[in-house]
Image (cartoon, rainbow, N blue to C red):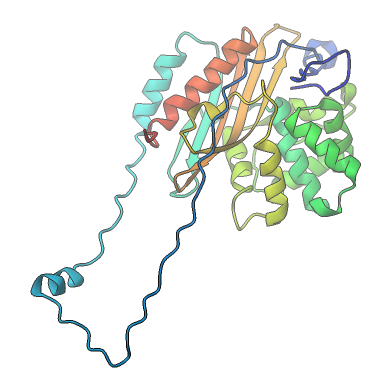
Length: 330
């Protein structure tokens, strides 16, 4: 998770406040070195095309078609080649080999929201959200109040919470949605099955960061940002995607590592150090959108020795799954 701006001489990359749970069962909010930045990519421009209209005199007789032209006009249009099925066993073996020398547990899911193809890795794992819970906090808020009706201060909190991962902004919005009860209620509306807010008086209100979830639930939440059947209004979905698409440098690592040229990426990352064992939870969820497809991606990891190791694992897992969904065009 990441802390806010303007405190203690922070640089542009604002680092995370970590969680503390009594009796060392949960992590203290701590600062960690800024995750390494990922290079930004240019977005492809879409150029409009115009078609000219040609008038044909009403009395003019159309020219006779040759036999070849007549035969060609009768041929059915060629169908686009369907996407190949996902070879789940092949991906699992690939991930098992990659993760053999890395700590765990790890759970991941990718779903092509355009075709319905999907892949799950260790689907029964339930790991903490860390700051990725902030997306659900904002989506819960927008169910109650549309973006255009929010105050300037609340909009600023939303910007700080998503783009800078500011914990204090998240605390304020956590209270506005009704805490754990409001968080869980919103999750149910979005179809989440394994994600429930943590009730009680958590240290510094960081209850949202120790929420346990599944990769499948995080994919459902990402789908709700692009689906016309989402309970969230289209204009509000656009605002969430806008913020997720503009996270600050140093926080744009994660699922975007599998982007192709011209893709648009919207993501939210989280990182949290456990006081009990000094190990890191590193999580990345988001959408990769481009070339006629929307891919919802969620990768959750635990027990990383440091942030660098966790980020490498998240990106390595994402890349090894996505290569079975598509090949980047050169």
